[in-house]
Length: 259
Image (cartoon, rainbow, N blue to C red):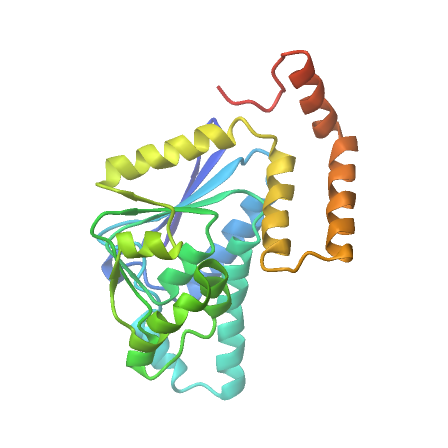
């Protein structure tokens, strides 16, 4: 259901492995993703996490059998279930490690939410995205904070029409960063990102990601500027910050560099 591996360079790979269901979510997969990203996010040996999907599609969103069962649940049961999905998305979005998504095939509904939670995403040419919920009489409520954080008010069209859009459009929206001609080219993009992540201090990367999450869309205020001053002051005094500055001044190489 969710395959996991870790290489010698600290790259953890999680692969959605329900190809017969186009990697659609059910309760078990949601729980596995929540646990996996929470655990790997705290693992010192992990430098980055790459999420991809087995088979013909990255993810078709919610499993139809799961949704059919939900129709018979109480309001409280449905709310608890939706909260578990939101918790899973938050575990990915807030993971202190860099998260990379490789999208291909069909990326529908909650699958779009997964892509939106990534720090970096590459889509193989031919990938088709769709926020399909309104066609089912539903709304993309649970994924909407994450999708709108990534593409802003432009989500309104796609939420309302549920029309499909291609990888180039996803890139123009800011949902994905790169479009690759095929799977090998997508892996080359991933390798490029991992090379650069491997040159950066892991703690600084986690703190920089927190900056991007905490300050996005905020107005510049005295409180915000004071917060940024506190954060850089703290980073200058930690061992990682001191090592990095000393290595730069002595033209040396800090201990975290992966070659």
